[in-house]
Image (tube, rainbow, N blue to C red):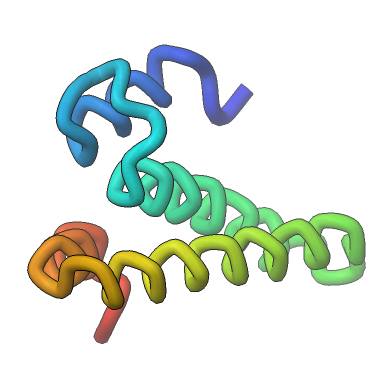
Length: 89
């Protein structure tokens, strides 16, 4: 499986305040980004997989909503997570 509990703990400890910090915006955005990257690679090979395409669009929307919330609440945290994940070109 591409996303096991060890990988989740690694993402949460790297981008959150700790390994058990699963609720912060930064850790959730990082987890969504990891899943989006995986599904994007899947869609490049299977372009007719419409269920995965719908899941990908939903994940991008959830990440966008979290980033908008973070941008409204704390612009410095928003800029830090965008820079850390290379979300803007």
